[in-house]
Length: 136
Ligand code: THU
Image: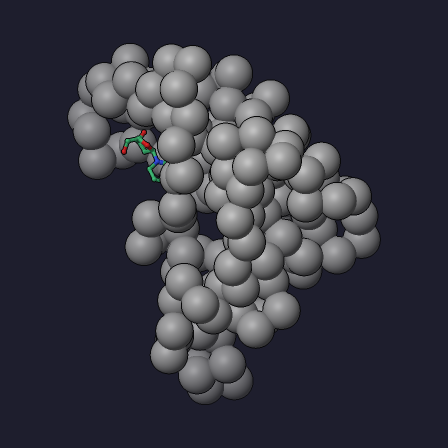
């Protein structure tokens, strides 16, 4: 699956966003190493801190179905029809770090299949802490 196709999947996933408080709707599409695709949206809560971002929804869906190795994620965010470049929040960067090699995993943000930017996770989360630091 190409980066543009993954971006389209993120834009489609955004339609399920539950964001009555911020009105900022986010969709994410996560491609696993085995080629399987997991999508997610942000799910807000009246107790704001209980909100889950779109990226974490996608990661938790994938991990809960047995996937632990990933190639890339695309993220689409914005209010209403107007998308902007929704770079992942710090918590989502750290959650991705748990399951992805920072130098090899690609993060794509965009407003359409053709209008997008790509980063390695390492660029977005340099000098990161991860499972490799923990005792066996
Ligand atoms: N949000 C995401 O879904 N992903 C991010 O990386 C940044 C923020 C959501 C959380 C909340 O529902 C809304 O965007 C506004 O912060």
